[in-house]
Length: 371
Image (cartoon, rainbow, N blue to C red; front, side, top):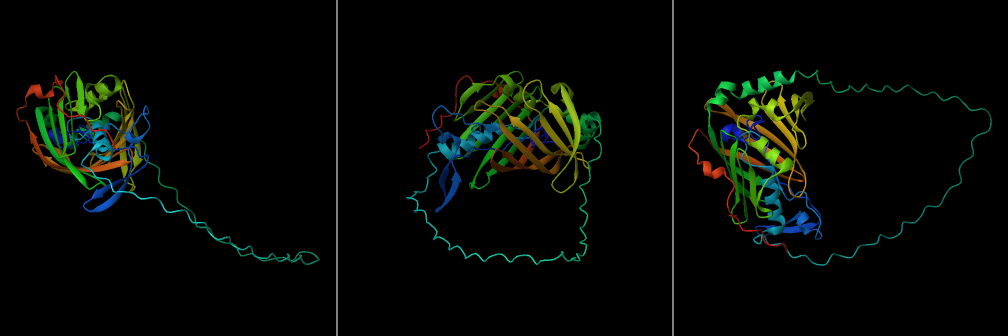
């Protein structure tokens, strides 16, 4: 489950890292501009009536571990900021809608009296039999292997328990691109032994967010919700995501783990682990049956405005020292999607312990009111 820190700094190592995409619940059309051309995008839930809640206005989380720099919460918050809060995004002027056209009535054809059936006994009609080709049912997935066998193979595919355990920190940098918006940004994710993480996401001139864990407490700061210390299911989910070498500790982090087989869109067999934490919803990690590397992660991210479904697909696994790290991500949080591409991974660099601690005061400006 490295969908979050990619190889200790990379992005998504089969389960220890995570990735997130950001999404925004759409409620009404909003016109943005790309260059000189207007681009229509649905409006965000920030445009809804006062007092209502916008479940999508929170970032999707990273899947857990230490590999993916982007978190779901970060992505969704940035999405809300981009579509509804950022003053730098001009909206194309809209004119009055054209009056609806009324179609001319279609004349009803004259009815012809039905021809009465011929009298006398019915005549026999020969009907040639029609051969109906048999439709082959999709092959059923083979019975799932044991949870322990799947976990053991996933760890070995990443480089083995010995290799994973010898590293103490990672720093991953990644470029992200929001589909359909023509916008991009950067993410820096630092993780260290002791379940400590810090993720900084920046969209130049538009929005930034930070989130971290010091091993005991997790916190987040963004333009929508400000600086806050996490609690309840949201805090537990963040601590699981921050778990250093989470692949070696899934049994301790998830009281219940079940195995089942699925097939991907191309028909390839996937071995999936459905993991249930003490609080919050289940996490589903699916591994390629041949390589045992993580391919898909699904979960629901808890947040201040509600829960957000999140899916991450990882690929382009590369070797970084003695481990494999995924360099490509495709993330979906609600209706909004973005892609990520890792640009650098550094292992075992010195880290400042103060960077993971809960900030004493806010450092980001609040988002401007939507217009």
